[in-house]
Length: 459
Image 1: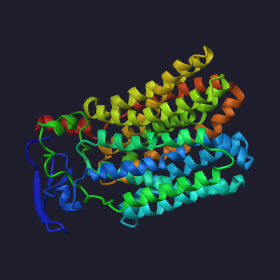
Image 2 (image 1 turned 135 degrees about the vertical axis):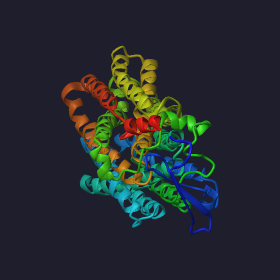
Image 3 (image 1 turned 60 degrees about the horizontal axis):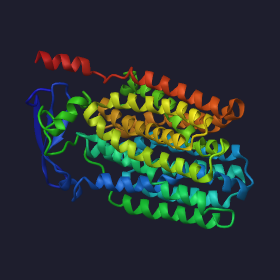
Image 4 (image 1 turned 90 degrees about the horizontal axis):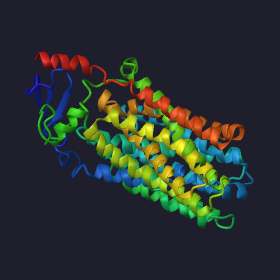
């Protein structure tokens, strides 16, 4: 970037704060002058901690579900295939709502706060349905469809909130918030393994639904988006020195603000979508089958529960760590790294099962959890890095919608592969798919960056 803006203008915001818009040599506009406190009345750090808490609350849907399956099957008379398909339908709708929710939000039809309100009540309904509806189709409608839509509203709103408020160093912040979606489930994993049975399942599931409602409602009260093109007042977007500038050098801002149609036409958004489909499918497969595989090879319930607990914790912590590292290494390199780790971990799980090594099984559960979660914040941060923040809710909604395909082959179709090929065959296939996803990620390039660098060099 050049040291001085090409064009500048000044105005006054609705709060009475003066701001100006500067344009860099690529034509990208930055709105500077307003602090986070001018807009929010408090520090923008709240837009990290509140989404993080809300993400922890809804994490029980996905990461603890596998630990509850046996009791749910006994209580409702469901088969193993029934329980897997309920989760697969949940994943489909949880991911599928991301794009329409982003579109409604950016059109001003649904604010971030309202999306959280609606999502919290739908999450409550999902757990009430899982608790009280024994008919599998009604449970799919209640938990899979309504609960999936509700948790998807909360998830997409929280993730996009962070990218909008921290455009200059979104990797670590996005990873931190995204991590809550995994390790927030840890208490429920152990509850479902040790204190959840056919005698108390109504009470436990009802209380979990009420817990999600209260936590998400409390957090959502403070949610608010920044103005379009907003940039932190204390960070010069055109400067080439300082801590934020170092991160921006590794992960330069998008050359301009791409609409969803424009992002698709670059070819990079479809590639991101494909890579996420493949990687998320492997991750969901591991979440769905790890406890059952541990029991299949003869490991005790403590090892099975601990392996899932380890996966959930490392899955979440890994998102934060890799998010932070991506600000230093670069987003693309970090993404490829975690996808490769995920793939290698699948083969490691097979090895640990074959030699009946419990400690080795936990090691590869650790690696699988690390790789199986850390790619999510990478895609969430890469999207505004490549296409800008103004349309991030819809652009990331399109990328994240790949997870709705992943849920089908990671859970439901995964159970069919296990039935046909056994666990070893299924885990080997998952490892191979992960390596293909890494190869796809290697093809990613920031749209317009090469031309922008040539212009900057010439200037």
